[in-house]
Amino acid sequence: MNKMTKLAAAIALASGALTTAPAMAEVEMSANAGFVSEYYFRGANLGDAGAYGGFDISAGGFYAGTWIIDDSDGGNDGLETDFYVGWGTEFENGLWIDLAYNMYEYTYSSDSESEIMFTAGIGGFGFEYADGKGDWDEEDPTGEEADYTYMSLSYSGDVFGVLVGAYEDEGDDTGFESEYKHIELSASGEVAGLDVVATLGKTFSVDDDDDNDDSGDGYFFIDVSKSFDL
Image (cartoon, rainbow, N blue to C red):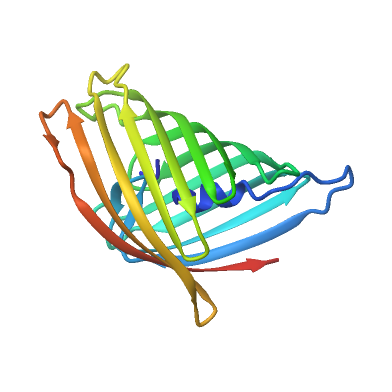
């Protein structure tokens, strides 16, 4: 389950690069395609290696798009499809803000998630806050619905970046509560015309109603992608 990112942090931060445009704003369209060695989002392992692709359209600071990943080689065995709409702007002092609505759906499950996400940043520093609801399968023993929040602070340089995030499932309807924190160190660059990001991460302070209270697990994945203007 892609609880965005547009995935994560990279897509969320990229959306904030939108700037205020004149009334007769030019419509811009772009597409992207890529591959991840393992599918991690917001510190959670959502699948094994998978190919993905997306499409975006923007005008005057407003944007909409979709993003799909094929996790047929992973345990979920199917597609995840994300939809999002939002608005962002950048001020003269370099501060940017972005507000988006995201929805996540899956071909291998009747589960779905939706959230409101706010991101902001300045000078390479970024902040993300998401407030969402998961509509779980009624046959899921944990319940039918759950409220969750996610928050992160990050810094992205020309090559290296760092992110610290915290996830909490408040368990309003499910009665199942969980929370964890995670930290990621990343290195990015261009190789043969492709954008390559290597991420080393670790979850910690893991606590849920299954009495799992431990230091978490480490993880590593590589994301190779290419974006195109249409």
